[in-house]
Length: 221
Image (cartoon, rainbow, N blue to C red; front, side, top):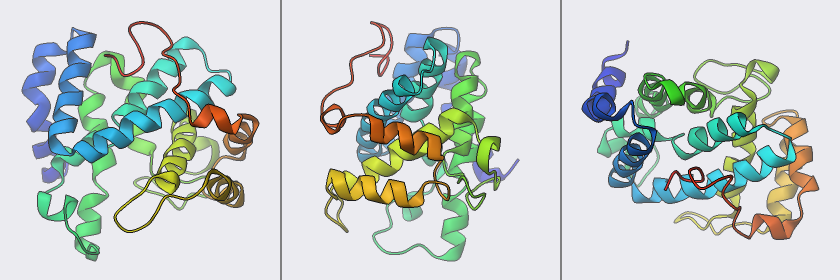
């Protein structure tokens, strides 16, 4: 295993060992670790959970699949705890070597979550959330249905949030502009089936809160 991945995993090792038999406490511990590492990342994660669940419901996922999608979406960037601050918080463009380090975060996140029984399915979303339908993503270069379905769902939700959110370097796009971009990239970056599901959901549903699946889910509060 890459040394940086191992070191990052060790940061949560004690928490995981203490709480891996207690689902609720484990989720709270992981959320706290992610929030302390990067509050902006945590806010993005919580938004993208809602978008992912909207798509998951539209695509007919069952309760177990929705739960894995929820947790995979919430913790998709948990691996960034192993990325040095000099890279994660760098204000300017990353160098080639810095990008190599940054691109380790899906594998680090997978290493963390796959050690916890109830998060094993979610860990596949974490490992594959930067893969692309055309096989040009990372870290494995998977393509098409080789990519876990929940990871393909997450990719669309993640892109939608990235496009419509205000960032330091750009203003958020309109819903219409973001939708047009998703359609343009369907069959290349994104699964066409997921993009089609996105277009079937009314715009108003994207700007209102998605209700929790049950009292114990939805951000595991």
